[in-house]
Length: 423
Image 1 (spheres, one colour):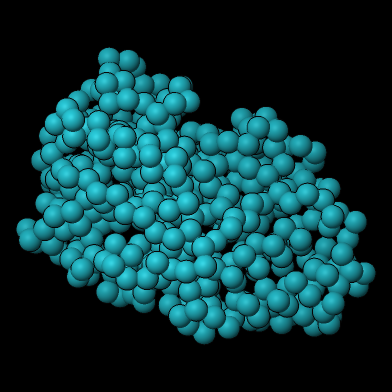
Image 2 (cartoon, one colour; image 1 turned 30 degrees about the horizontal axis):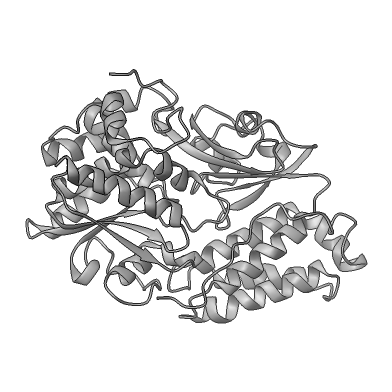
C-alpha cells in the first residue's frame, strides 16, 4: 500500500481517473464501520462541509439519522459545482472518483439509506462519463454494498443548492424552496435526506479509514485537515491546490505561479463571497478565524486575484448581471431586487448613473438581505456590498468620468452559459 502524503490526501499525482485497483492500492479496501462510531469520528475530526456553508459534518449526519429513525433516508453527493470560479469538485471527481463513492457508501450505510445518488450538472459530460465508469467498475467486482444512482440537473447557478437538487431528484423543477422544513426533516419525496458536497464525502471516507486524530494532524484546531482551493484570476498557473489552513492567501497565489502584476484585490469564496483588498489579506491564513477577521470566508474554496491594471468595477458588473439572470424568480428580493441592483450598478460602471446611486445600492443591498426564499439574493447582496467598500474610489471615478482606462481589459472572472429552463 502506498503512503498518503501529509498535504496531498485527496488529489493523486496522476492526471487521469484513478481505477478501482489503483484506489485500493493507495487507500486499502473500504472498511465496515459502526454507524455511531463513524459519526462520532466525524464529530471529533472537526470536518465541516466543503460546499460553502461550512456546517459540521457529524452534526448533519446525526440529524438525518435521528429524523429517519431507522425508516431509511436518502443520501446525495452534490457534484453540481455551480460556482463558476470553482473547479475543485470537478477535479476531484475526474481524478479520484472512488474516494467520493466510498464516502457516499459510508453515508448510505451509516444512515440506512434507501437511495444513494450522485447529482451532477448536465453540462459536464466528462464528469458524468468518469462517474458512470467508476460505478460500473465497482459493480463488476461486487465492491459496492449500495446501489448508486446518477441524477442530473440544469446548468443553472442555484440548481446546485441543496433544496433545488432535492426538488430535481424528486421530479420537480430544480428551484430552491423555502426552509424550514430542512432536507434532514423533509427531503427527496418527503424522506429525510443528506446532501453532502463531494469533497466532504471524500474526507469522510479517509476519516473512516484513518480516524479523527489522523485528520486533525494537519491544519489548525478550529480548521483541521486539508481543503481543495481553486486559485484563479491573474495568476500564472490557475488550478486546484490541496492545502491546510496554515497556508496564507499569498502562499496559494505562489503555488499558482504568482500573481501577474501587482495584486489589488482578491475575491474570496466565489460569487456569493466577498472582495477584499490584497493588502488586507495576502498574509492572512485561510483558517476560519483569520479570514473572518479580514471580513471574508473561504466558502466553496475560491481565491480569484485581481491586479492593479484590471477594473474591479467591470468584473463586479459582469458577475452581478450573471447572478441577476440566474434568479429562480420565486420571491421579490430575487425577481425584483437583484435585477434592480445589477442594472443600477451597470449604470454606475458605465458612467450613466446619478451621484446618489452608490447610496441607493448600499440601501437596497441591505433591504435584500435575509428576505429571499433561498440564500441566492443574500450572496449577491454581500458580494455587491464588498465591491462598494473595496472599489469605492473606482466607482466614484466611473460615476464622474465614465468607464476607466482598464475597463477594456480581457475579463478575468468566468461567466458561464446557462440553460433556459429549470428541468
